[in-house]
Amino acid sequence: MILGMTTFTFVHVAISLIGIASGCVVIYGLLNAKRLDGWTAVFLVSTVLTSATGFGFPFFVLLPSHKIGVLSLVLLAAAIVGRYVRHLAGAWRWIYVVSAVLAQYFNVFVLIVQLFRRVPALQALAPTQSEPPFLVTQVVVLAVFAWLTVVAVKRFRTEPVSPG
Image (cartoon, rainbow, N blue to C red; front, side, top):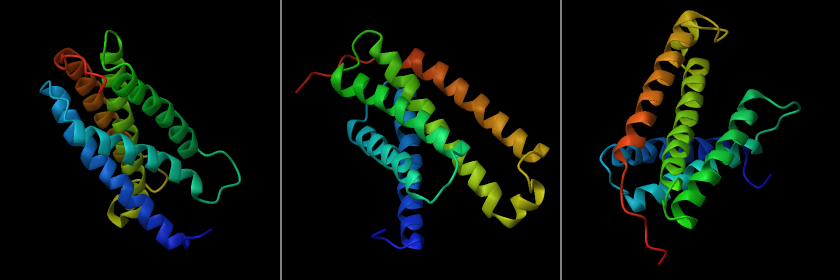
């Protein structure tokens, strides 16, 4: 590997945080019927890179994180096609919105998993990640993202993007 594992981990985490931060801005835009083209590009690229670099860590069996990475890449492909190939026309508008918000949900889901694994106070609350604090946190986040998805689909009614 060209990068040392510590450097690789740092780069992966940095890209992930960029994806999460830019994803929050993109969702804000969706909720306010604004495309936010630059933020959208940053979000999509950084989130694709986050999922792709997740496969760069050594593994011997397919882990839940790999499954989430594959699902995220499929969602991101749909979002990219909807936004840049189909220009948000027709059903591609809601496909883009749902795919983008779900990709952000996966980013946040993994962030929560990592926080409960790495932050001592959270790890003490849920050492196996099957305890109520972890489960309640994930259910609340899922509910928030379900609500965000529904509201964003209803509100993001912007004109199709011109193909130039």
